[in-house]
Length: 18
Image (cartoon, rainbow, N blue to C red; front, top):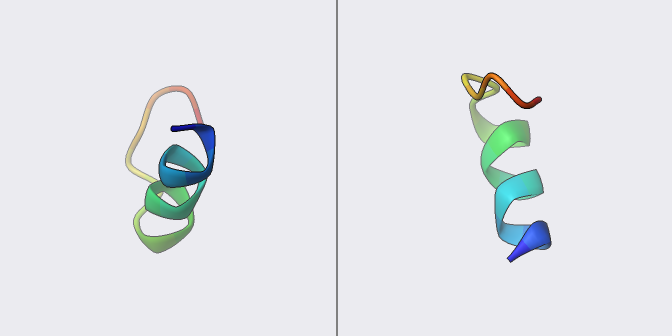
């Protein structure tokens, strides 16, 4: 799950956690 979140942030850093 962590890897999926990291990939998402790399593709589109629109998360408040990133």
